[in-house]
Amino acid sequence: MYDDLGEHGVRLQTTGKPPIVLGVLFFSWEVVEHPEQASWRFELRDQHIPDVVLTKAQQIDILELDKADRLQLAPTALKNWVDLFEHWQEQHIMAQLTHTPVMTVLQSLEQMSQTKEERLRALARERAVWDYNTDIITAREEGMQVGMEKGMQTLLRTLIEARFGQPLPDWLLSRLRAATPEQLQQWGVSLTQAQRLEDIFEG
Image (cartoon, rainbow, N blue to C red; front, side, top):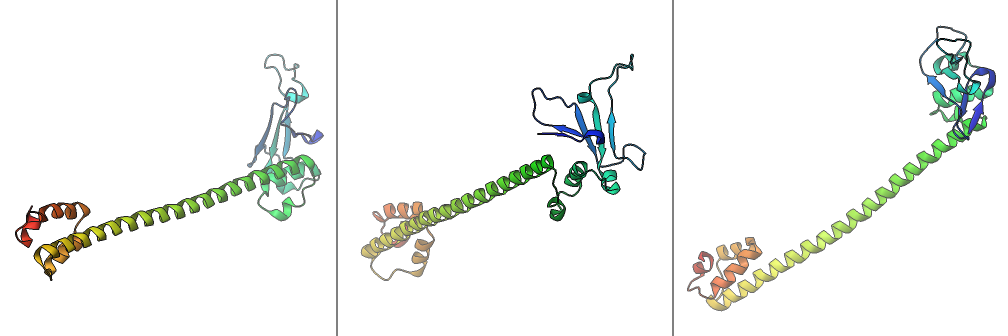
């Protein structure tokens, strides 16, 4: 993109063979104490031989944005650039832009913003699906674990009842319900040699 605003001093170039613009500086504060001008073009001269000036393409342009906005500059191109930097969040002003390079920049910014929002929404969807699947898997694993523990409790209770008869005391049933799988396994081994109920839990 190339934009030459002529006498108003702002030149922009982002492509070219080779790029020729040395610098365009935008300031949101007042740089030069001159109330009626906001756009400045400075020539680059040799320190020892002031008559030697670099080419037009290597001049430095400065635009005081706040001052330019306050002065309500007439040139459409320059005003469009000022509006872009000063009022980019005001849609009704952005809708009035007509200068092609400015509109190109605005469209690129909007596209980047939309792309970012779409990417964030996609990540949110993926995270939601991941969390859902993780919850399902966790629930299944927890359910399987609980089922195994209940099965071990029921089996051990049946074996104890077969060995010592029914009904079993409440303290024993409470210990079975609160036991870990490792404890249930150990108590099953102890049951084979137990002479009384207490021996099951003393091993």
